[in-house]
Image: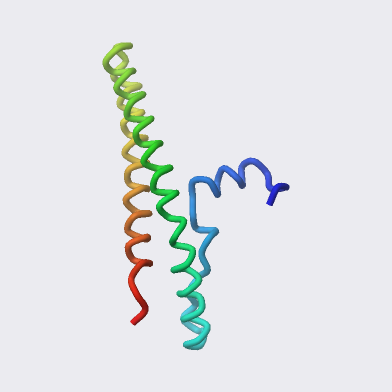
Amino acid sequence: MNNLPFRTLLYRYFFFGWLFRELDSDGNLFERAAVLRHNQRQAAWLPVYIRRWLCCCGLFCAAGAVLEGWLDAPGMGAAFYALGGVCLSAAITTTTAWIGLRQPLA
């Protein structure tokens, strides 16, 4: 884990797909249940990712407010507001995945 390149670490810092296993439809019932249990255990890390995306959203929106209000650069402010919106959508998507994985097995 210590020998990973910086861009891999940065990717893993913001995106959580590497934590989960894919649920194959051609596996038998026991394999699919094991993958689902694994993914539900890994879902405990999703609130960490939600906080990261919300912090980025707040930082981008604050930077947009500073650029727009104090420095009188509305175009640059709008770009930072747009990045804040992207971060907010990532946080909402992660929250939806977290809620879905917290559902008990039927």
